[in-house]
Length: 351
Image (cartoon, rainbow, N blue to C red):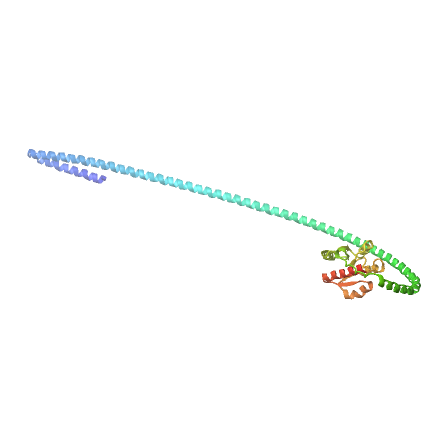
């Protein structure tokens, strides 16, 4: 119940009491029944007033309790709002602190990555500089080696040329002496041959007649195998020597190599091969000069010679005149070279 209702109730009670008192006074002279009724009415009015007062007091207490509850609720709501605001502010502070920490970590990581990239670039630059220096040193060393090799090769060529010229002079002197001796021998032998030719013819006819009557049949010469055949390769090109030597090696021939004509002549003096393969153009002594020298010597006059050249038609006449057995033009079939070697080796063995 509100305060206004309580006041109205109290006013009503006061008014009722006022009218009851006036009625009591005017009816004072009434009989006892009316007095009793009045008394009862007054008692009832008093009871109602007391009840109204108690109701008003209860309403006031209830309103005070409601006011206190409302104030408590407002205070609790304010506290909740203040606590929520404090929590929200703390959360914002924490979020801002986390953002700042994350930004600091990002900046630190970016700085570390930048430093690592700079270190990698510096290391790459240093490695590149070291490689450049190493390559420059290698190129300088290679150039020095090439210069030294060129100087040594030039010195060797000069020495070889001088030796070739000296050997050519010695060979010319030797040929001159041999020609003189050969001329004297021919003069001496011409007479002896003329005297002995008839005697030899008669003796040969008689020996042939006796041999045909009594000698057994002659067995054919045994063919020479590649393992028994020594082939010399004379060429100033190492590539040609290695390539040809590999080819002959696959056919099981024994291979000897000479770097030029002079080297071939010196090796042939020490050990005579079964077949000689020579190039035409070589420093010191050419293939044609080598062939003429070998044909002029009785010990090497019958050595089979195969000459390889790129212009075979132009040199064919000179090769035939020098005594070359086979002239092969480049390029040639490998089986053709093997066939010539085998034929010449077998003809040499049967001769």
